[in-house]
Length: 265
Image (cartoon, rainbow, N blue to C red):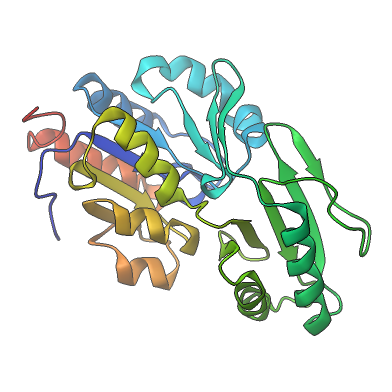
C-alpha cells in the first residue's frame, strides 16, 4: 500500500460507486470522515459524471448539512461543468458544439445502426432525441447507447469519430459519454486546485470507473475502491474497500490518524 508523499491538502472523490453507497446515500461513517478532514483544513471536492440536476436532487440536503466541510463547487458532467450548489449556478462551462455532437452520432450510427443518443446541457436541460433527431444546441455531454449492449464497440467508434475534437469515456455499464475536447475530470479539478494554489502532489483522488482515470493520474496519490473497473484497479496507487464498505472513509480515517491530512501547510 502506497502513501502520499506530500501533506494532503485536497481530497477529490467520484460519487456513484465510490463515495456513495449503492442506494445513492453518504453513509454516516463516510460523512464523519469527510467532516474530520474538512475540519483539518483539507479541501474536499466532489467530482462526478452526473449533471447538476441529478446531484441537486439526490444530494442537495446532504450538501447543505455538510456546509463548509465540502468545497463550494462540484465538478459535474465529467468536467464539462463546474457548479455552485449554494447559488445553483454553473460557473464554468466547457460545451461540446452541436455540429461535433451530430457528426459523432452520425459516424457511430453508420457502424451501429441501432445507436441511441441523448444530451445534457447546463444545470437543468436534458433531452433524449427520438430516433435520429439532431442535436440543436451546444451540450455539456452527449450520451451514446447501443440497445445490443456493445459498449466496447460504441466506445471504440466514438473515440475514432471524436478525433481531437471531443473526449469519450464510460462511467457505467450502458452509456458512452462524450464531452468537448479537454473536458475531463482531471482538467476541471486542475483548474479548481490552481485557484486554491494546491499542487497535484498534495491531492488524493478516489474513483471506480474509466472516466475517473484522468483524475487519478493527475493526483499525487490515487485510490480505487474494491468494486472498481479493472482498468482503475490496475492504475491506482492503492485499493481500498468497496463503496458499500466505506472504502473512502477507511483511507481518510487512516490519513487523519497518521497526521498526514491538513498538516505541513
